Image 1 (cartoon, helix red, strand yellow):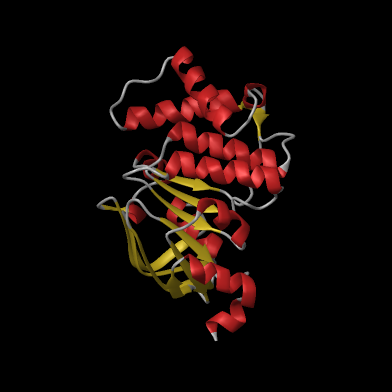
Image 2 (image 1 turned 180 degrees about the vertical axis):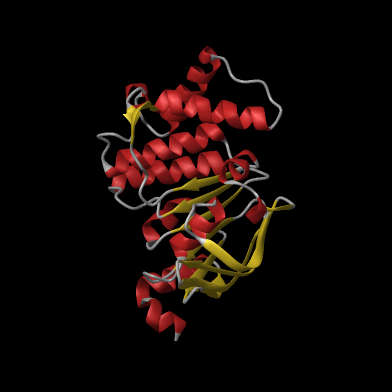
Length: 247
Protein backbone atom coordinates (compact mmCIF):
# COMPACT_ATOMS: atom_id res chain seq x y z
CA UNK A 1 0.00 0.00 0.00
CA UNK A 2 2.81 2.43 0.92
CA UNK A 3 6.33 2.04 -0.43
CA UNK A 4 9.12 4.47 0.51
CA UNK A 5 12.35 4.13 -1.46
CA UNK A 6 15.64 5.83 -0.55
CA UNK A 7 13.90 8.92 0.81
CA UNK A 8 16.00 11.97 1.62
CA UNK A 9 14.46 15.10 3.13
CA UNK A 10 15.63 18.22 4.88
CA UNK A 11 14.30 21.14 6.88
CA UNK A 12 16.02 24.32 5.77
CA UNK A 13 19.66 23.40 5.29
CA UNK A 14 19.53 20.48 7.73
CA UNK A 15 19.20 16.98 6.24
CA UNK A 16 16.95 14.78 8.40
CA UNK A 17 15.99 11.72 6.36
CA UNK A 18 19.03 10.08 4.77
CA UNK A 19 17.99 7.19 2.58
CA UNK A 20 14.92 5.82 4.35
CA UNK A 21 13.21 2.82 2.77
CA UNK A 22 10.07 1.09 4.07
CA UNK A 23 7.16 -0.97 2.75
CA UNK A 24 3.82 -1.21 4.54
CA UNK A 25 1.33 -3.56 2.84
CA UNK A 26 -2.43 -3.46 3.28
CA UNK A 27 -3.60 -5.16 6.45
CA UNK A 28 -0.48 -4.28 8.45
CA UNK A 29 0.13 -2.13 11.52
CA UNK A 30 3.78 -1.12 11.34
CA UNK A 31 5.30 0.62 14.37
CA UNK A 32 8.23 3.03 14.06
CA UNK A 33 10.39 3.60 17.11
CA UNK A 34 13.61 5.52 17.55
CA UNK A 35 15.55 7.97 19.70
CA UNK A 36 14.73 11.68 19.80
CA UNK A 37 15.91 13.53 16.70
CA UNK A 38 16.00 10.39 14.57
CA UNK A 39 13.52 11.73 11.99
CA UNK A 40 10.24 10.09 13.02
CA UNK A 41 8.11 13.24 12.98
CA UNK A 42 9.88 14.44 9.84
CA UNK A 43 8.83 11.20 8.14
CA UNK A 44 5.21 11.74 9.21
CA UNK A 45 5.21 15.37 8.05
CA UNK A 46 6.79 14.51 4.69
CA UNK A 47 4.12 11.85 4.08
CA UNK A 48 1.39 14.31 5.03
CA UNK A 49 2.83 17.05 2.80
CA UNK A 50 3.46 19.61 5.53
CA UNK A 51 5.12 22.80 4.19
CA UNK A 52 8.74 23.40 5.17
CA UNK A 53 9.92 19.84 4.51
CA UNK A 54 11.87 19.46 1.27
CA UNK A 55 12.31 16.04 -0.33
CA UNK A 56 15.69 16.00 -2.07
CA UNK A 57 15.76 12.40 -3.32
CA UNK A 58 13.79 9.17 -3.31
CA UNK A 59 10.16 8.27 -3.92
CA UNK A 60 6.93 7.42 -2.09
CA UNK A 61 4.22 5.35 -3.77
CA UNK A 62 0.78 5.17 -2.17
CA UNK A 63 -1.90 2.91 -3.64
CA UNK A 64 -0.16 3.07 -7.01
CA UNK A 65 0.20 6.87 -7.03
CA UNK A 66 3.22 9.13 -6.65
CA UNK A 67 2.38 10.51 -3.20
CA UNK A 68 4.96 13.28 -3.35
CA UNK A 69 3.30 14.73 -6.48
CA UNK A 70 0.02 15.28 -4.61
CA UNK A 71 -1.00 18.32 -2.58
CA UNK A 72 -1.92 17.67 1.09
CA UNK A 73 -5.68 17.77 0.40
CA UNK A 74 -5.20 15.38 -2.54
CA UNK A 75 -3.33 12.96 -0.29
CA UNK A 76 -6.21 13.09 2.17
CA UNK A 77 -8.75 12.46 -0.59
CA UNK A 78 -6.62 9.52 -1.78
CA UNK A 79 -7.05 7.94 1.66
CA UNK A 80 -4.10 9.17 3.76
CA UNK A 81 -4.66 10.43 7.31
CA UNK A 82 -2.02 12.17 9.44
CA UNK A 83 -2.45 12.21 13.21
CA UNK A 84 -0.36 14.99 14.71
CA UNK A 85 1.94 14.75 17.70
CA UNK A 86 0.57 18.13 18.81
CA UNK A 87 -2.98 18.66 17.43
CA UNK A 88 -3.60 22.33 16.73
CA UNK A 89 -6.42 24.52 18.03
CA UNK A 90 -8.79 26.20 15.56
CA UNK A 91 -10.66 28.96 17.41
CA UNK A 92 -14.06 29.90 16.04
CA UNK A 93 -14.69 26.59 14.27
CA UNK A 94 -16.64 23.78 15.92
CA UNK A 95 -15.50 20.17 15.61
CA UNK A 96 -18.82 19.23 14.00
CA UNK A 97 -18.53 21.98 11.38
CA UNK A 98 -14.88 21.19 10.68
CA UNK A 99 -15.43 17.45 10.34
CA UNK A 100 -18.51 17.71 8.13
CA UNK A 101 -16.73 20.11 5.77
CA UNK A 102 -13.63 17.87 5.68
CA UNK A 103 -15.63 14.70 5.03
CA UNK A 104 -17.79 16.21 2.31
CA UNK A 105 -14.76 17.79 0.62
CA UNK A 106 -13.17 14.34 0.43
CA UNK A 107 -16.41 12.76 -0.79
CA UNK A 108 -16.65 15.40 -3.53
CA UNK A 109 -13.06 14.70 -4.61
CA UNK A 110 -13.97 11.00 -4.91
CA UNK A 111 -17.11 11.70 -6.92
CA UNK A 112 -19.47 10.86 -4.03
CA UNK A 113 -22.55 12.71 -2.86
CA UNK A 114 -22.18 14.83 0.32
CA UNK A 115 -23.68 13.56 3.55
CA UNK A 116 -26.77 15.37 4.80
CA UNK A 117 -26.66 17.03 8.21
CA UNK A 118 -28.68 14.22 9.78
CA UNK A 119 -26.58 11.43 8.30
CA UNK A 120 -23.39 13.18 9.36
CA UNK A 121 -24.54 13.66 12.94
CA UNK A 122 -25.44 9.96 13.17
CA UNK A 123 -21.98 9.02 11.91
CA UNK A 124 -20.31 11.47 14.30
CA UNK A 125 -22.27 10.10 17.28
CA UNK A 126 -21.25 6.54 16.42
CA UNK A 127 -17.56 7.41 16.14
CA UNK A 128 -17.61 9.60 19.25
CA UNK A 129 -19.18 6.75 21.24
CA UNK A 130 -16.40 4.45 20.02
CA UNK A 131 -13.86 6.79 21.62
CA UNK A 132 -16.11 7.39 24.67
CA UNK A 133 -16.41 11.08 23.81
CA UNK A 134 -19.57 13.05 24.52
CA UNK A 135 -21.13 14.75 21.49
CA UNK A 136 -21.08 18.01 23.46
CA UNK A 137 -17.29 17.91 23.10
CA UNK A 138 -17.62 17.82 19.33
CA UNK A 139 -19.81 20.91 19.40
CA UNK A 140 -16.96 22.87 20.95
CA UNK A 141 -14.26 24.72 19.01
CA UNK A 142 -11.59 22.45 17.54
CA UNK A 143 -9.25 21.48 20.40
CA UNK A 144 -9.79 24.81 22.19
CA UNK A 145 -9.63 24.19 25.93
CA UNK A 146 -9.11 20.45 25.43
CA UNK A 147 -6.64 18.52 27.57
CA UNK A 148 -3.87 16.61 25.81
CA UNK A 149 -5.83 13.38 26.11
CA UNK A 150 -9.04 14.98 24.81
CA UNK A 151 -7.21 16.32 21.78
CA UNK A 152 -5.93 12.85 20.91
CA UNK A 153 -9.35 11.25 21.39
CA UNK A 154 -10.96 13.96 19.24
CA UNK A 155 -8.36 13.27 16.57
CA UNK A 156 -9.24 9.57 16.62
CA UNK A 157 -12.92 10.52 16.21
CA UNK A 158 -11.81 12.55 13.19
CA UNK A 159 -10.01 9.49 11.82
CA UNK A 160 -13.10 7.37 12.34
CA UNK A 161 -15.32 9.84 10.48
CA UNK A 162 -12.92 10.32 7.55
CA UNK A 163 -12.31 6.54 7.39
CA UNK A 164 -8.88 6.60 5.70
CA UNK A 165 -7.18 3.67 4.02
CA UNK A 166 -3.82 4.53 5.59
CA UNK A 167 -3.14 6.32 8.87
CA UNK A 168 0.17 7.86 9.91
CA UNK A 169 -0.08 8.39 13.66
CA UNK A 170 2.69 10.47 15.19
CA UNK A 171 3.02 9.70 18.92
CA UNK A 172 -0.72 9.34 19.44
CA UNK A 173 0.00 8.07 22.96
CA UNK A 174 1.65 11.36 23.99
CA UNK A 175 -0.23 12.99 26.87
CA UNK A 176 -2.58 10.07 27.49
CA UNK A 177 -3.30 8.61 30.91
CA UNK A 178 -3.83 4.86 31.32
CA UNK A 179 -7.57 4.87 30.62
CA UNK A 180 -7.32 7.22 27.65
CA UNK A 181 -4.48 5.12 26.23
CA UNK A 182 -6.66 2.03 26.27
CA UNK A 183 -9.58 3.89 24.69
CA UNK A 184 -7.42 5.36 21.92
CA UNK A 185 -5.67 2.04 21.28
CA UNK A 186 -9.01 0.25 21.05
CA UNK A 187 -10.23 2.98 18.70
CA UNK A 188 -7.25 2.47 16.38
CA UNK A 189 -7.98 -1.25 16.29
CA UNK A 190 -11.70 -0.75 15.63
CA UNK A 191 -11.21 1.83 12.88
CA UNK A 192 -8.06 0.64 11.11
CA UNK A 193 -7.88 -3.14 11.69
CA UNK A 194 -9.78 -3.96 8.51
CA UNK A 195 -8.99 -5.43 5.07
CA UNK A 196 -7.50 -2.86 2.74
CA UNK A 197 -6.25 -0.59 5.53
CA UNK A 198 -2.86 -0.06 7.14
CA UNK A 199 -1.22 2.01 9.88
CA UNK A 200 2.20 3.55 10.38
CA UNK A 201 2.35 4.05 14.14
CA UNK A 202 5.13 6.25 15.52
CA UNK A 203 5.71 5.82 19.23
CA UNK A 204 8.36 5.81 21.95
CA UNK A 205 6.69 3.36 24.29
CA UNK A 206 5.57 -0.24 24.50
CA UNK A 207 2.39 0.69 26.38
CA UNK A 208 0.47 1.64 23.22
CA UNK A 209 1.80 -1.41 21.39
CA UNK A 210 0.41 -3.62 24.17
CA UNK A 211 -3.06 -2.51 23.01
CA UNK A 212 -2.60 -2.10 19.25
CA UNK A 213 -0.24 -5.08 18.80
CA UNK A 214 1.74 -4.21 15.65
CA UNK A 215 2.63 -6.77 12.99
CA UNK A 216 6.11 -5.28 12.50
CA UNK A 217 8.40 -2.88 14.34
CA UNK A 218 11.19 -0.81 12.79
CA UNK A 219 13.89 1.29 14.42
CA UNK A 220 14.51 4.66 12.78
CA UNK A 221 17.88 6.18 13.66
CA UNK A 222 20.05 8.72 11.90
CA UNK A 223 17.40 9.29 9.27
CA UNK A 224 17.22 5.65 8.13
CA UNK A 225 15.51 2.39 9.07
CA UNK A 226 18.28 0.44 10.74
CA UNK A 227 16.41 -2.67 11.88
CA UNK A 228 13.00 -4.28 11.37
CA UNK A 229 11.48 -7.17 13.27
CA UNK A 230 8.35 -8.44 14.92
CA UNK A 231 6.68 -7.19 18.11
CA UNK A 232 9.53 -8.72 20.13
CA UNK A 233 11.83 -5.94 18.84
CA UNK A 234 9.78 -3.34 20.73
CA UNK A 235 10.00 -5.45 23.87
CA UNK A 236 13.79 -5.55 23.54
CA UNK A 237 13.89 -1.77 23.17
CA UNK A 238 11.75 -1.37 26.27
CA UNK A 239 14.02 -3.67 28.27
CA UNK A 240 17.45 -2.71 26.94
CA UNK A 241 17.20 0.75 25.33
CA UNK A 242 18.20 1.92 21.85
CA UNK A 243 21.97 1.93 22.32
CA UNK A 244 22.10 -1.69 23.47
CA UNK A 245 19.76 -3.04 20.79
CA UNK A 246 21.36 -1.15 17.90
CA UNK A 247 24.83 -2.14 19.04
